[in-house]
Image (cartoon, rainbow, N blue to C red; front, side, top):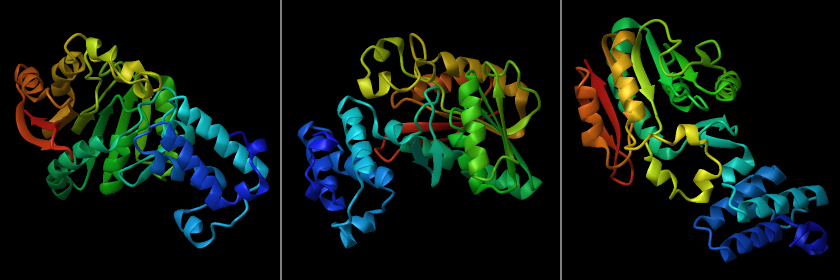
Length: 293
């Protein structure tokens, strides 16, 4: 339903929210109610409580038009957070760009696993240096910095736009004094040593790439998804280069696919690393591994 087809009565907050939910439900979207709420709240600049307390609140024509345009994009397969332009991750609101992977809750498993290892480092050194490989939005590094005020981080990404996005997120979060980002092909332009090297690398096999749903394949950058024929290309690069940039007693933390634990452990073992800890996501799948030398 286009905005100009809506009767005046349909311009109140409650009715617009109900219509948005109805259209997304009719399309069979799995999280239609949540997506509808996020879209309406974002474009109307309201909060959840507003729809409960004042559903008769009138929205102007421009706002309703923006909501209906967002609905059309969602119905066409654009993920809701791409429409909003941001994603919340570990309590942080992170701007997205076309060259960044949309950070997802599974990756918070890696943040928690690495934090558990870094607590001792911070207590001992009163400092902590982190390298985030393939930083994207800066999600992993910035989440670690938020939890560790003594820490500093460097993010690298092959995409200049991704590096700029990460810097912008750090600035908005007041962490720009502790976070830097630049373009590098993995370790190529990295100098120095770090207490932790972290990464959510591409780990989907090239065959699986052809089977991805359009919401992923059509919107997340393939550079951040495609892990090669067996999904392990990035792990081989990280395992081969990490030792030269890891401080004594430092750790390497990586996110993995749910069936990759044995293979990734073997890749790191071939370069002298031993598994220090493994963590599962909320669905019970293997999701994060932490290694040491």
